[in-house]
Length: 229
Ligand SMILES: C[S@@+](CC[C@H](N)C(=O)[O-])C[C@H]1O[C@@H](n2cnc3c(N)ncnc32)[C@H](O)[C@@H]1O
Image (cartoon, rainbow, N blue to C red; front, side):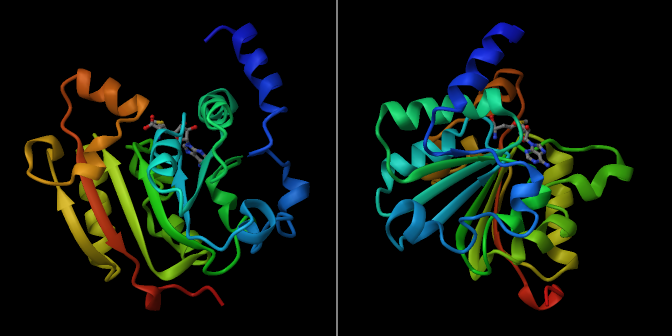
């Protein structure tokens, strides 16, 4: 993307009422909506679903249209990608959608304990180097962060083209006693899973065109392994 287009998107991002892009100073002691997203932002106490590394936010916007009785928040560090989801949700006047531009490393500055009901992790960067394994969004290090903000029985969904990341996540689940619900390789050649199949993200389309199979994991955390005070 040309830098002029990017700058235009960054400028428009400043006008979206449902996009939050605070700097670290504003979140280090807890973001202003932490623990209060339901009443103070959405104006209800409906369940809150997160999409992590949401890019253009296809799941956030797609599921929000389907489930008006739930609230959806997409998180990504890249503003030009978030612009797409912000633009659509504002054009469609969707009141159950928000986006946060931030590092997922800081996710527990944005939400209080048990504030989140469900998490989608869609085509995360695989971080193939072993030395970077703790940067994978499904590493135990990240799951520990999520454990601070999700309800004990929150469901996690992972959709990925990357088989090593899929296998790695299965290992993390097994080693830590997390509760596996579903593990499906080559999703589109399996029966069922209509909801998971019904939304295709930007990266999913790219990887599918390149011939990669799409894989899907669904699990809950084993809360007894976390030491979150
Ligand atoms: C491969 S893209 C997938 C985007 C989108 N989910 C999709 O499927 O089209 C990975 C996304 O994760 C974001 N991301 C990676 N690590 C992140 C982090 N630590 N904090 C916030 N965003 C991150 C990137 O900016 C990028 O948009």
